Image (cartoon, rainbow, N blue to C red; front, side):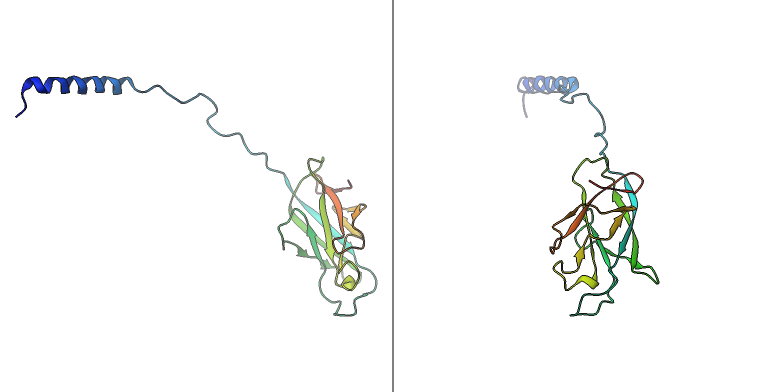
Length: 165
């Protein structure tokens, strides 16, 4: 059994440790906002797409009855969608949903284009931005015309209307 004299230093150590814990540690928390600042997410709008197909099919290697498809650079790869034909005309229409607003310009304009099976055997391989309207605005600026990566440039405003760069 331990003597009383040998237990006294332990008691003092325990007492000092208890006092130290009772006083607590200095706070390392710096006062500031409790929540992170909100992320500025872009507004999303629906945008009408209209494309006028040429009057005749120039493709001879395959049938021309495939649908017209639309692609925009805000979409994920493979995120294009088919447009609906207007009966009795060569006009195709659709609505792009959840398009991030980028006008007034905060970044580069969107790149847009169509795949048209009527044009499959041309130098563009069927891709074009000609005769294309985005948010009721005709595409006026076409990059690499006549090439396989032909595309038009457009901004989209808060009303879902296209704005030419």
